[in-house]
Structure formats: structure tokens, C-alpha cells
Length: 273
Image (cartoon, rainbow, N blue to C red; front, side, top):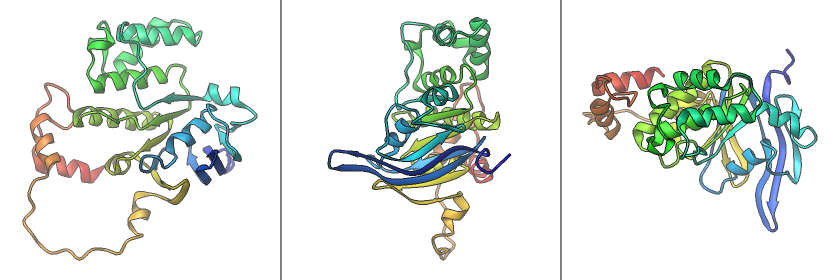
């Protein structure tokens, strides 16, 4: 495999303006196949614009971008066959049940045996017991997991998650994080946009910080930490954080029936991740 083939996404010199507003000013990055790449930035930094260009929903003013080996400008149909996009808000039909949502998407993709596809995805995303319920009754985390499951129908090699935990409570965020990790474990390439620092730290193999339309730094978490000098550490009594309290009370995976962890074990698990 050549270096270019090893990259699921290749972006070079990407620019986009809306009249006098320069949103992207020359964006460059690459995403390795089967990895999680976090595009981190504040509101208005240009994250969603990048995703829209890569998913062929928007044309760049300048620069090139390739997804799964296809040029987004000249091979848009091939790009769309290779990707799935999950936006900032879950795009599920609340009138339908969870299973019916999945069956509908499988039929729209003209796949055989949509019922089995739906059942397999319900099991994979721990939604089997809720599959016969209307999506309107789902919690925020369940709805987002269903949304991601719908995105995976047809096994796209690349998935874009545009701020997938926006508006979710802490328990639902943990559920989505586990889902994203499982995607990468199965070989799916994930480009994740987020404005949450802890989300990028928890999930990403590589992190790029997008600021005022440019990538100002790109590297692993370890590489980014090395940009700052080590801090002097003095011994002080450590008080439990709110996250320690939350995980102790509800359990790390946020599912009912799971024994609550101690704050120490929760903290240890995070440090090992």
C-alpha cells in the first residue's frame, strides 16, 4: 500500500469564503485509515464547513480533497458511496420505531434482507430491547446511537461525525464515546469535529486544532502536550472532581444495572485509556 492509499482522507490548501468572510484559509491534513481524527475548534472556526466540503455538500473555492481515494470535486458520486455523515442533531424519524428507521435506510440503499441488517445493528448498538419502541421515546444517547447505526448501513469505510455529543448529558456522551471507539476498532475511519477538549482527548488518535480558518497544530495527544513545558508539581490533597462523583454514582458506561465504580477506579480507567 502506498502512502497515499494508506490515507483515507487527504486535504491540501482548502479555502472557502462567503463574500468577504474567509472561513477556510488554506487547510491541510491527512487521516489514516481505521483511525479517529479529531478536528478541534471553537464555534465558527470552520469545522462544519470542512465536513460539508469533504461530504460533497459544499464546493471549495480552492484546494483539493480526496476521500477514500476519490476527488470530492470530480468524483463526488464515488465519494458519497464511500462515506456516511452524522450531523450535529440526530436525524431519526420519531414516528417510526428504532427498527423501522434502520429498515427504511436499508431499503433506500437497495440492500437485501433489510430486516436482518436492522436486527444486527440493534444488537451491535445495544438497542435490541428498544427496537420496537418509537424513536420519540428514546433518550438523547439512545437516539444518537440509533443515528450512528443508521449511518453505518452499507458499511461505509469513512464516517463523519459533526459534533456528535452537542446537547447531550454526561451519561449520553459516554455512550456515544464508546460507540465511536467501537467503530474505529472495527476498521472504520472516523473524522470527528468537536469543541470539547475532553472529547478529543478521550477519542482521537490524532488531533488538529482549527483556528480562524487554519490548522495551527496537528499531532497525537502526546505530541501536543510536548508543546508546553512540564508544570512544577507540588503535593496537595486531591479532592474528587465532579466527573469522579458522577461515575461513582451512575457507573462508567451509564447503563442501568451496571455497578457503580469507585472514584479511584474510574480515574484509573481514564488514565489507562
